[in-house]
Structure formats: C-alpha cells, structure tokens
View 1: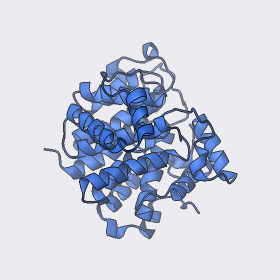
View 2: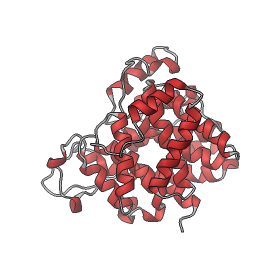
View 3: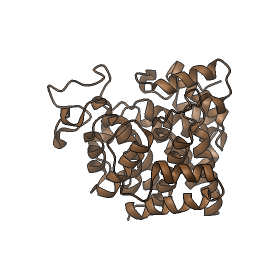
View 4: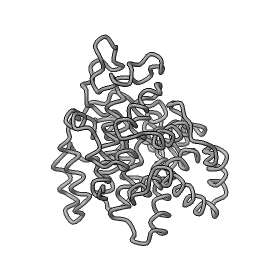
Length: 335
C-alpha cells in the first residue's frame, strides 16, 4: 500500500527524474535511440548526447519551471500569476531553480513571452504573443499545483477541483495562453489528484475527464476544446512530440500500459522527439501511481541538487514552516 505522502513525493521526484532521464535523448527520432535496456541517465558509449556538457541527472527547463511553481505556491500560500511570472523570469535570466544556475534549454514561445513580460506586458497577456501556440511548455510544469492543492487546498473536493482547474488555467497565461494548453493542464492535474487518491491509471484518467466535463458545462469554450482537441473518448495514443495534446495523450497511453515507474519513463523516452518533456509529464503521474519507493534508487541517487527538492517537500508537508525558510535552500528569490 502506497501512502499519500509517498505518492506526493513520488510525483515531484518522478517529474524531475523523468525529465533528467530524457535530456540526453531530446530531438532524436525513435529509431535513432538506444534499445530499452540501455536507456539511462548516462547513455551508452558511442551515443551522442543532445547536450554534451550537461551532467547526467540534470533536470531541464521542465523541472526548473515546475520547481519555480512549487516555490511560489509555498512562499505565497496560493497561486499568484505575478509571483509565478516573476519566478519564471528569474529562472530565465538568472538560473533560478536551474541545476547549478545554468539554463541550457528554453522553448521559443517561452523565451518570447518572458521577453514580453520583461518589457512590461501584463502576465495574463504574454502567453498570447503567439495566439495559436500549442506547445507543451505549460503542461510540463503544472504538476505542483495538483500536489499543493491536494495537501493544502480546500477540504471540500468539489471546491478544491474547481480551484485547481482555475489555477491550472492561470499558470498557462504567462507563456502559453491558448485554451488548448489550459484544458490539457487542467485535465492533467485532475488525473494527478485521482491518482493521489489511490485510483488505478485507467480509473484515474476516466475520473479526471468526468470531473472536468462537469466543470466545463458552465464554460462552453473550454468544453469544446476538451471534446474537439483532446478527444477523451478515443483511445489514448501519442507520438511523444511537443504538441500539447500529443504530449498529454502520450503520457496517458503510457500510464495505462506501463508495469512500473521505470517502464513508464523508458517508454516515454523511446517515443523519441521531445523526450525530456514526455518523460517529465509521464514521470510525474507514474511517480504518484507507484510512489517514491517505485522510482529506481540509482536514478534518485544520480539526480542533481536533491537536497533542494527535499527542502521543498518538507515545507509542503509542514506549512507552518513556510515563508522565509524557503530562502535557505536556493539562490536569491525573485524581486
């Protein structure tokens, strides 16, 4: 039996480990990748890593932006779009929550949106710089909202779900405003919450869809996006690309098929293309499903700056210690 605390820790670590596992293989086609048994944080001899100077066990922009989100939630006790946008800008410019303070991978839309934010464009408008932008840059970082709401959100499940969906929508706005990104992020969070309750993969996905449909009855634009773009009534299949719907569908497909955490993230990497993000998005859910103990110890040991993650989890579970103490484990907070 996996405890809820194990699932929560597994979600955050699962996201980061999946991200780090996928980093060396990013942009490769599936047929160019090593075989299943050789997918590790340090690729086999002879394989040319995408980022030769990045050490094994390093999370990318995916993990850093997710940690910025968790940091912001713990610091402010709520989701604040301005606070989160400030944190993302600090990551982009100063390496906030990046391993060793080094930013080595930034999506084009994210860079353009944060540039607009720095120029004084309101955060709620920056994600519309490219109105049709439907990359997975907001989906990849959203999981901390599900974890935080589960631990510290409203005790009424219906109210908590609505607040979670609202925040999942809002966190997209700074970089990826299109409704498709908002819907995918909301569904992902609701599925994560169902997994935190102990549901099996298929049941959790069905529950997430059911809850979101109920909420979207009052929001026809979002309802149309869910039904016409995400298409939750057809089998979950994906190709591991950077398109947000494909990324979400890839993760759900793998979650239904995988036998354990390791199997899940290796399947994600072996789809090729956007390997770090597919493994990050899949790994967060698989980490909840199988718990922290389900993540291979060799990967946890290899993960960089793990002590900072431990500190965040400690604050999440002990909210009375939040606030200024969070500064002790990381670089300068955003102004």
